Structures are given as C-alpha cells and as structure tokens.
Image (cartoon, rainbow, N blue to C red; front, side):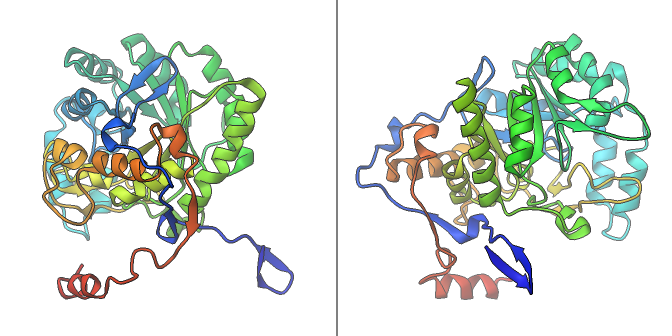
Length: 385
C-alpha cells in the first residue's frame, strides 16, 4: 500500500506494459498447445472474442469469425438492429469529419431498435453457419433477451461500462442478474467488472462468463470522462482471485474474458497469464477487411445522447481477419498473427492449455518493451508513430 498524500492510502496497480512473463524451465512445442475454451456447454477453438461494437461485428463478420473458431458478439442495440440496410449509416459515420462525428452518431443512433431486425440478424448468422452471440445493456436485457432467445441465439452478453449483480434505480424496476440468469433459456455472460467483490457477486448470480475491464479500450474515453478504471493486469488478477474462490466453493470454473487494452499479441499472452480464458478485441479486429467500420472504430458509449464516453478513431485496414488472427503477419508491430503469438508464448512458458498458462510466472517489468530498443523507438518517432 502506498500513500498519495497525508493519511490517504492508495493501492499500486499494473497494466500490461508494466509486466512480463518469465520463460519456464521446461518448454512446450507451440503446435501442441490447446487454445480451446468453453462457455457453458459450447466450446470455442480460439480464445478470441470480437467486441460488440458496430465498427467490428456485423452478420458477415460474425460468420467469418465463427468459422475460424472464435466468438463474435453482435450488439442488439446497434446499427444492425436499427436499420434494415445499415450500409449508408456506416458510410456516413466513417466519412464524417472529427468535428461532426459525435453529433452524427447521436443522430444515427436515435433511430429506434426494431424487434424484427433483432430476430433477422440472429437468423442470418445461423443461416451462414455462425454462432449467434448477442449483447444488450442491462436496461434493455428484459426486452431484448427474450427476443434473442426466441430467435435462437446461442449466448447472451449483458454488458455495460460497469455492471453489478443488481442495478437499482428510482426511475424504474431494478435489474437482477440472478433472476435473469435463472429465467433465460440461453447462457448469460456479464460485464464489465474490475474488483474482487463485484466479481464474486456476479459469479454467485450464475453468469456463464465474466468480462473484465473498465475503460482500457482504444476507442473508450470512460477513464478520461469519468475518472473510473483499473489497469488491466491488476483487474484480471483480482477478478481471477474471485473466480478461484468461487470454484473452490462450487467446483464450477467460470471463464473470464479480458475486455480492452490489448494492442499486440504479447498483451493477449499476458491477459491469459493474469487469469483470462479469452480476450475481447475491438480496434485490432476493426482493422480487418471484413470489419464493417470501413477503417474506423468507435465504442458502444460513443453515441450516448448526453455524455459520450468514447471516440471514433481511424485504425485503417491492414489485412484480412485471417491475417490478423492466423497470419502470416504482414506487419512487424505485433498486431497480426495473434494466435501464433499466443501459442509461442504459451510454449515458452511451458503451458499446454490456457489454464496452465494462468499459472505462468509474472514479473513487474516496466522497461520490458523499451530495454535495448533505442533504434526501434527512434524509428517510430521518426515515422510519427
């Protein structure tokens, strides 16, 4: 414990850039590594989850990622369920000037969500051979959850900037995740949280997976706007401790998904070592040729009518979804071939499975990305990166 001033203690926390993984004394061939993970009774070959953002996931993208073995989450409160033909809205948002984009987003997202489009999108994903995983905010879960279940969605994610087991409001009925998980036919995942206590309550409420992270995403401004957030390495470790306690009590292992703050393959490996079973990616996948954002990326809270907590960023298009996940890498910045990067890191740490990787040795090493890299740093500065 440290002190930020007289009598005011504050805990030191860590992000991915401040830690490193230590190679094991016995290594494993990366080709022997098993990357699969489970949500309820469904197994996914890759621990990759595409973020429920309109710039990342639409129907074709969800199908493409499903075929590669990952999970794509379609936002049921996004453009795909507000417009029968969403292409025009996406084109306008991608092309808008920085001065106009926030107002344009608020305008575009004022279009009501249509129940028939919720069912249609789920059916389209299924018809294309994809796994229909969908998301909603706690405020809309009571309405959209049953619609998604009736349409045949495989998994529901109830997600907000910060989620708790029970959200109370004087303006309406409280949402109880405990009741929602008990009453919903499909598995219910929940996010986002960053603390031991909140995580334990959510696990006890019966969630099928728990998403970790408040504000670390590339397009998210929650930490700046609200001043709220915990660096990802510490957040994942704290939530993983709650998961371990829950598993000790019940014998049930609930997967954790690290949501946000992942910029390169090494961050994926660090997230798993901290306790994650999978990672949710936004900006990295928004760069794919298949992504609907047209080289732009924005978060779910960006179009908020009164308090936007996100921004549109230009990420460009760097390759196909397969390039980004499975390679071969066509860039040298660690943003492609993420799966092979994870396999190689796990092999170096002697881990054959994700759960074994969660036991890898972690050290505090804030200089790990800069030590001996003078020429690389100078080159990036010269190129304006």
